[in-house]
Length: 168
Image (cartoon, rainbow, N blue to C red; front, side, top):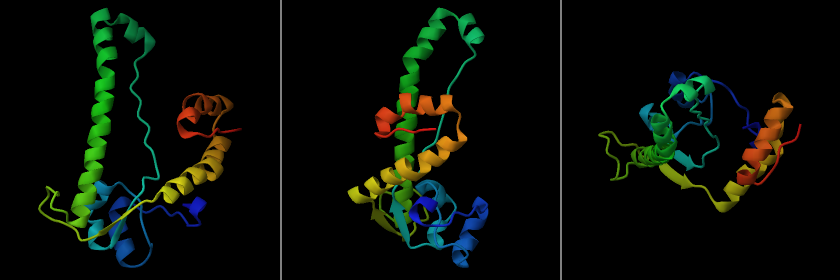
């Protein structure tokens, strides 16, 4: 948030609604469905559809354990992990859309209670501003805290996707 001129504060998730209601904070960031589930729509008027975060997941096995697995089990896992990853991404997209739908009261909402928020779509300029903030502020501050190997791994695996590099 500091990259955009805001002040970041940490508030326990369950205290966000009263903080918004009482003007302690002006806005809050979470996933669209988690915000819906916490009833943020009761104290907020607008929902901005711009993801500003990413989540890391890892599925790992100790090499000694992996080597003990039957080769058929190894093959099964290797063949099906991509299916699982695709299903995780699809479920995340569905949940995000359900959050948009329920927070805004769309007919597509499958929940009984519907919010009345206005959904604000991010523009191409918004996405570029986010990418610039990531490249110019967020990733450099992260790289300061990360080891040289960590930064090198970022540049090997993420830089080709994101379009910018990190430096130590």
